[in-house]
Image (cartoon, rainbow, N blue to C red; front, side):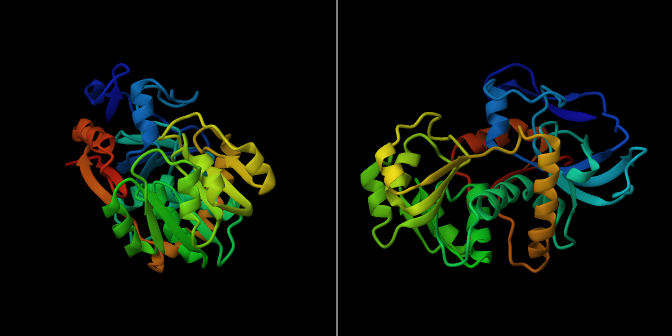
Length: 328
């Protein structure tokens, strides 16, 4: 099979398209013919040598989400049959023509979605659903502030907040992304031209503090968010695009009785991934059929254009997801 392979740590030029051995499913696994995949920040970090793949997945083939059809099933698989349209998350290896996954980590693709649209769903929407609905315990009418609102997770979070009856706000470095996000339910947005500090956080909350902050940025953002947070508010940290270290006003955090929760998906044990996926399939996937949720694709590339796809993500000009097609 063909796969995008990281030849060595470095820039997009270290990515090659190679023929590699096709994996075989174990008893509870499914072999999937990948029709489309999507790009994530973790893929860039893995390519740069900063985020190695966990044990048990290809060390040099990136890719964490996919859409495709079941090609073969293991001897103990009961949920799927060859030809079924499925999507899901894996810890790596999705930028290839085939991959294997545990049967319980897969979800049926809604009939309303194309391969490309389905490939853009798992990472962004599962991350946002798990962070907002589950870990933050979002309630209707609560005010939510979403940093990096133009990202795939950011736009998914806006829609999921709106679907639950809460009020989503967002930040971005690009004014055009704030305007576009309003098409998906964003109430209002704040332009962040530099590194935000406490003063910026207080400005964000000028019309009312936020019950939840979804932070995809890290760096100076958590401290600024504390100044925008309501009493007993929650900050969910799921990204460090602006830096992996932060100085926090701990006195303010104590006074507000704030909660800060850090979360990742890739490194979770299999049973936790299964639980998150099954809950998502039950609560969120039907919303795509009802057109309550929409998939936002920035650009599409063929697998052979993997270097261009990485360059596009590194430009930080994207709005929504970058999708890879496995065939021309």
